[in-house]
Length: 100
Image 1 (tube, rainbow, N blue to C red):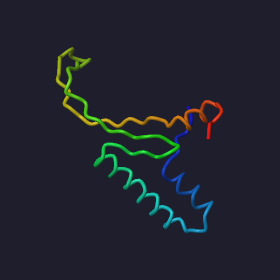
Image 2: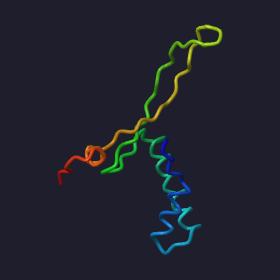
Image 3: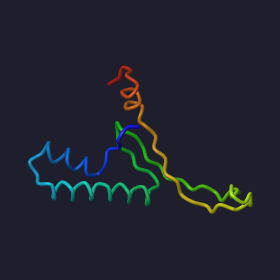
């Protein structure tokens, strides 16, 4: 399985490509992630052009089953977030020609 890109990896990559110190880079990354979280919470969507769109939506309560006891339970309503790739990024990912 592939290793996941972590926040620390992002900070390190930005640090290596800029002349800023690690503390500044880490703070900037934290601010960016905070803004992204706020946008998803407030607007239920976050669009990053050329990358994709994060969307939050409400799931209704539903029936479920406890697999150990076979007891029927009601799962509460909740919010879920989905990510949809942009067409441009999807084409790049699949090695297709990218139209300008």
